[in-house]
Length: 393
Ligand code: PSV
Ligand code: MN
Image 1 (cartoon, rainbow, N blue to C red):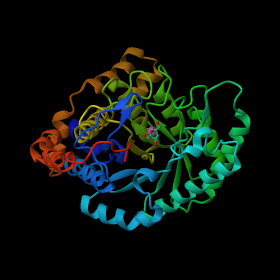
Image 2: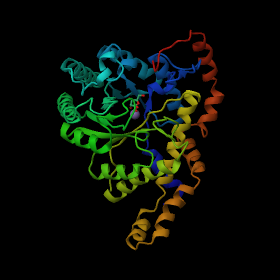
Image 3: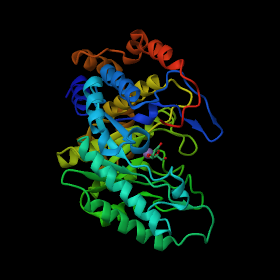
Image 4: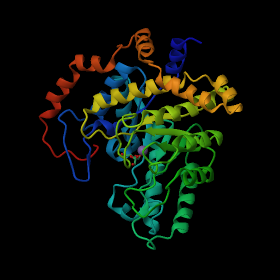
């Protein structure tokens, strides 16, 4: 197949979800630099996501965080439907918030206090109901649970509480819904985290039930970890539910995708493309962005991320799997490696521009955004609001 055809086919099948919180003011624990154009209402987040989707054509859904975006629970569904039809973007994954309330100081599902565990379970049950009300498939669970000092938490007991809690949550799903279990090695807990890695997430998801899968946040690994191997194993186990994409240099930095190590992202996509080739079927994976744009303009950062994701996915689709398999069988190491390197080095940007034009999209979404005047308009409209907006919302 010609390069253009391969790129077109790959991009036709690639969609990526945006996070509502990526359009809001965020910061570090040292402070927050407010951006006048940042979104602070759910209307504004849908509107900004609508811009990114209108210009790129590949972001039809917006991930929502329950406490930040849906304070009225399932009653917010009518509002969400109205915002969806106005912005052209539907509700995406629903993210319960089990880390912000004071009651979760010592954990949620792993809290020794049964009343707090019950509150966490009730919040997840509500979130599952919200997902149904807004017709969204995935409920994405991340737990900040853990401890800061050795000896302060009963790790095995907490594992048991997690297994029970996730089984109970799974029992609330209706058919078609999925529970995604996200792992993270540290932060905010700095001694142990209850779901610290993909193995723990996999075991818990398996135990929860057949509609649970693992969610891989690319920033949630130790520094030298081989993320694409984790992806390959989860694919082989039919347990890869989705991604939270971002990049990092040190910890969970939430930088824009591919900004530090684009070859890492390419290698992840390569494992997925190779799996699809070997099995003759596309795996069902929810690609999502999970970034915090502290310094970059939020909409620009999102457009940049989406374009980079498309580029790296398109490059991975250029790998000649049949030739690679032969080279691997013959242990022709340099040839096998260069098949990946050649695909990675190919400039796919002209083909992507053609794909955009063929789909009546701007050839250069970033430039189109700059020319649109949207940023100036929201800066003027939103900038007059007083500072002191709360985190993410
Ligand atoms: C935690 O670091 C995380 O990756 C989870 O996905 C949260 O939902 C998100 O970040 C909130 O920013
Ligand atoms: Mn995440």
